[in-house]
Figure 1: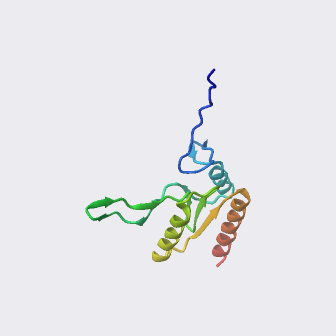
Figure 2: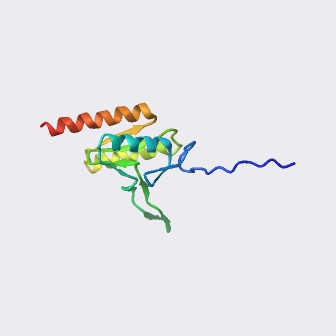
Length: 138
C-alpha cells in the first residue's frame, strides 16, 4: 500500500519559511508579513522587495561570463533597510558583509536592521520611530 504524502510548497530561498499573502502582496515568510503589518500600523513608509543592490558587477573571467551578485532586501525606507532572517542560509553572512561594504562605499547612511523574530521587529520599529521623532524635532 502506498502512502500519499501531502504536497508542500517549498520556499527554496528561505529555509523553514511559510509563504503567505496579505493585502494582495505575496510574502516569503510569516516574519516578513508581521514586519509589513507593524510598519503599516506605525505609519512608516517602506517598499517591499523593490530595491535590488548590485554587490559585485558582472564580469568575464578567462572567457567565461560571471553574473553579477545582487542583494534584494525585504524592506527599504528613506532612512532604513530591514532584512527579515528567521534562519539564515550558508550564503547570508558573506552577502550581509558585502552589502554593508556597499553601504559604506556609497556613503549610504540608512540604518540596516536584521530581524530574526517578532520581538526584534517590534524593537526595530521602535528604533525607527524614535530616530524619526528626533530628526523631525531638529
